[in-house]
Amino acid sequence: MKVNVGGVDRIMRIAVGLILIGLTLAGQIGVWGWIGVAPLLTGVFKFCPAYTLFGIKTCPMQKQK
Image (cartoon, rainbow, N blue to C red; front, side, top):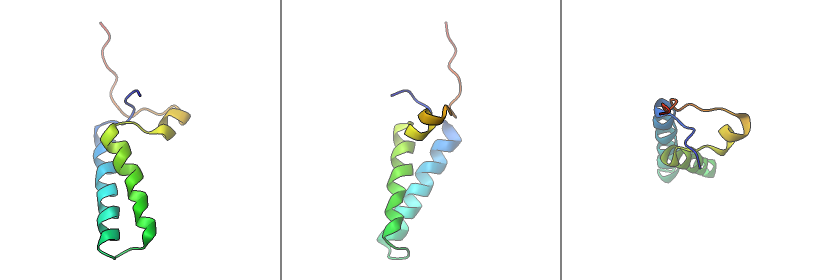
């Protein structure tokens, strides 16, 4: 897996995932809140399969030697 999720994108994914899961556990939203697992995992692993399909990359380019 190549990294394709950058800094700000990664932070937002983790935050949204944790918020959705937290609201679900607190009983504030329904079962659909478990969808927060998807952005949480993509943020943690810095890889989004959908980005690969669409050719998107939000991480900075690495310098080649």
